Image (cartoon, rainbow, N blue to C red; front, top):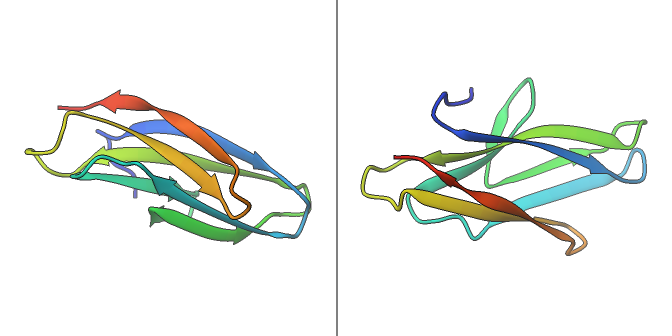
Length: 94
């Protein structure tokens, strides 16, 4: 389930078909939660799936401010199992 107050991003990952994909979110502010979401589930902070035959996986990546006392801004860095990274721009919530 996704939050209506979450900052939402489309994350598209390409790679070798039928291979494992591991993603994790780092550098998320304290009091915030990062989630990788598919139509069936949201996984906090990390996700492990197999790339489909197309070699393309699409996720909704969310940054959710969980605490009123948390910073009003948070970004993230998404890292794959091979060390490649992408920076997610800071979201303002609060």
